[in-house]
Amino acid sequence: MSARVTGLTGATLVTAPSVCHSCIWWQSRRNGVVNKRRWIEKAEDDWGAWGTVYYDDDGRTLGSMQYGPAPLFPRARELPAGPPSDDAVLITCAYLVDVTKPWVLQSLFLAAIGDARDQRAGSLETFAYRYLGEEPFARRFQLHKTVFPRDFLADFGFRTVRTAGRVELVRLELGGLEPVAEGTRAKVIRLVKEAFQPAPVPQRP
Figure 1 (cartoon, one colour):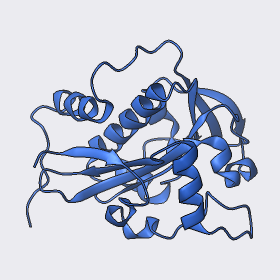
Figure 2 (cartoon, one colour):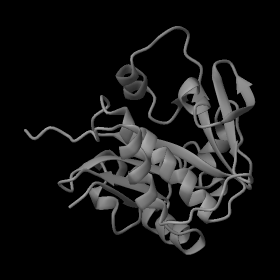
Figure 3 (cartoon, one colour):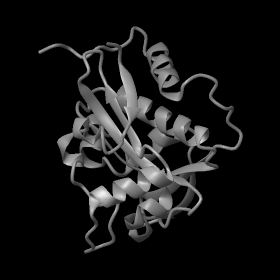
Figure 4 (tube, one colour):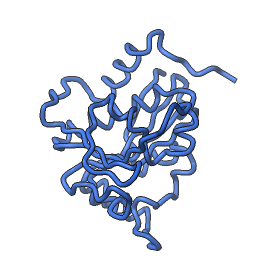
């Protein structure tokens, strides 16, 4: 089996990190309660897979990411620098099983960009944090799996929409990107492996 990313759905949620199984933080408003199963049904009816899961060569989960049309995530309207644009695909969070492997997060972002482009979305948005000075990658993503480092997002072309202190809402316009000729997720894996040759392989215990 080769490394791959697949859609995050009700069927594949069980393979995502366990912290994601019942989390409804983004799906609910402050102090609100949401039935996640019903939310999943609506998300998949309206949009399809609402994120991705990354597996290594042995089928073990390395990380996952959640995203979809911004209106699916009402909590985003309450955050500093929000609300996101109603016409944007919003990346809400990512979870890395091993934060010492940054290429996993990069591949998840590439998958989100490819999926949004295939869905003919005009833009991607997410929340960013501007760090002061150098912080180790692992520390940044252990603390902020829902708010991504601003410099990391800048490498993908995200631009600031608005700020609130050191938090930013950032946006990547997709209108000028070329359509994906090959399967999005297959292309993601190929691009990541080319960028990080020799391709990183998780160490066996």
